Length: 351
Image 1 (cartoon, rainbow, N blue to C red):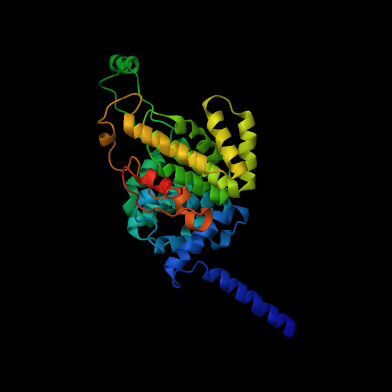
Image 2 (cartoon, one colour):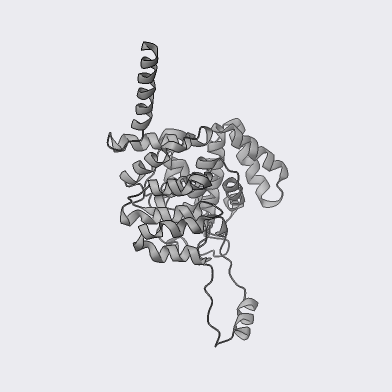
């Protein structure tokens, strides 16, 4: 009996220790670091029961105060919801109450979850978030795209398409609501973070396939947005592959299947991961950005180009390599990076 009692005490102690790792009341700052590390390692040892507690730490720590810097955590929540359809509703309900200003996280995570019946789940929890009715209706009606429906690049109609549309348009026909294609992976770097967060929650190859599709942009001289996002896709793939054997094996298999513009940057990723030589990937990206800064884009060789990029074109924010950097990748976390120097200063610190 004494042995059984000791075993029960030990079991209770272990459970308490696990819970304490993600309870915000202990020390929110320390707990956030614990949750970051927990998220990074989650796919290798899923701990679904502690997802609600981990998410509460993220909300408690005001992780979503700046949406553009919280993509990796949003992606993780979306992946956690989608990973267990039978318990998805129970999981989402466990997140409440949520601060009204951060309810958008729940709405978007459900839409991005990949659940076959995500719309029904959205309708069930909608009464808890009356202030997000417009956002919810946007996803339910299809005017706001889900994660995998977001295009890589915005489709721009040519001259003939515009002319054809003007000639065939019925002026009396009620205009249909169309999918908002202004959101694209080529212009929103936080989407790269969301894909990584989804991967950490599920280990799915689907987000990795989308990231691989961005690799040709690392050779782009068209826009700084594409060059930045493509460079970060290449760097994060290489960096995480160094510590993730299954991901490294998958990319090696993918390299054998790929042709065209994806093959060369993917070969560089695999080689950097195999040899643990991330410096070359980093230096190449810095040189490319410097060249584009100096000369402007291929499409617009204009010295005014750099000044017209706008705030955030190179704002690193907390991209996935940085967001989990201190605890997982060994890269300093950059929160709210500067506009035009974010990417350069980030990599220069790694020299």
